[in-house]
Length: 263
Image (cartoon, rainbow, N blue to C red; front, side, top):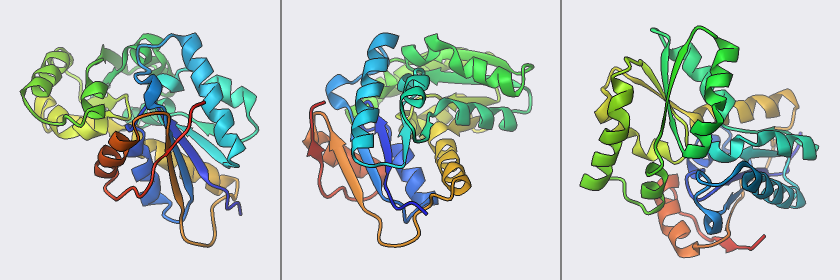
């Protein structure tokens, strides 16, 4: 038993898709979410910059007595090892869970991956998929505009529809049957993505798969919370008002208060 909270962080509000799935699977758990909007987007940052951000935020969450950390950002997950080496608590990224699910889902063994430039350039999805099944073909496409649309709350309209079509049609032509949404912002665009790719394409949300891994790790360590009402804290480094309005929309429940801190 461990009643300490779970810590989750992202470059903005996209990681709330992971929070939403964790709440579904583990409704009793306390959560602390940190959205680093002041340094959004992470997808254009260098590996050294990402290491600094991940280290700063992870150590802050540890100071809040979290029992496990979820790096709910694919770009930041490319430097997952830095947090795992520094900390004495479990640290989970979003890349490996998504890769595993895609390998289990694909039938024709052709998998597409979309994400930020940092995620795609890291090639970590391809590497993770090859560990599970080296025979699966991986076709990657950076989609640098998508997260920005989500952060602004633009989930419909001609601009985003054109962007989704322009980036995804080349992947569709590769004949993939499974597409990994390699950014935690992207589940908010799943309807548009499905419309472009076709209803027969399997969309893999790293948010859902990561939540499953969180539950598995806590069960294995016997660290699930056993009593009391859940408590949720939401913290950001900038943009409290936007976080409050868009965050409530994306989470599907009202966020009562957003704290602001500067690391």
